[in-house]
Figure (cartoon, rainbow, N blue to C red):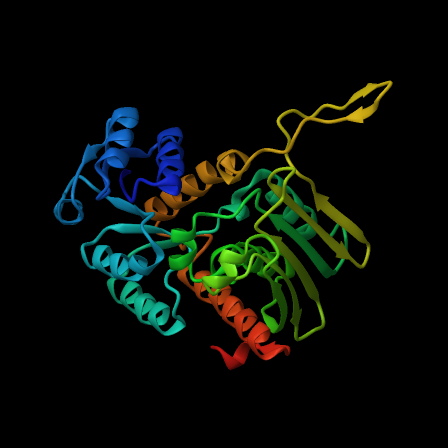
Length: 331
């Protein structure tokens, strides 16, 4: 499958590397208004530098990976769906639920394949954990605990366009929670603070949040996020069930422990998502290729993107109104 990457920033570079590592996938084009960013991918992977218009008209591009700013996602999805290209889009589809619904209608009408990027579903540890749940090893799922802490906040310019921490960062945890609970969330209760950088608060966002999700049957998921973890990229999950529990721990530079007279030490955590989820990004692109080739639904659909965004919207309202919010209120 011949790919074009739209947006050659940090996540575009990650996806370009993933495409290059997947059998049956080839990066043939890259588009970015920043010439240096596009040239970097051209130099590394041999991808031709093209404009958006050229990619759209090209008969040599089968699929696009959208890594542009969030406020361009829905327009580009519609544009390339109508052009007959398969579409992989980084989360979220848009910051407006109404706009997402309108976009998904176009996807349905054109019959194109749309996959939304939630790479944690493809991480080997998360997949192994889910397999134990599906095999019944821990009985009925009762509670999910998700810890996601970034080593540091993103640039202020990014925060201004991201839609806020719930729509940008916590949205990954919302998706994982839905996946692990295997039930839709009914209520969302969120708390948020500015503890890392006062400028983030001035920009209208938060940097430290906690969320409790509850399904109609009473299952719960607890999410904790912060934009600052001085010890590295903190990614942990535990799922508790009626017969036991299963957990996935952090990844480190090496899985060793050193014991000396000074005590026990271990190598540091991996520094950020680019290194922690390398295998997941490759598996994600491979799954997309299979879905397009086989004509089957991708593992993470536009509907998954819509529901994760709905939980983010409920969390925003919960903080603003200091109450638990029914998801039905925002859908």
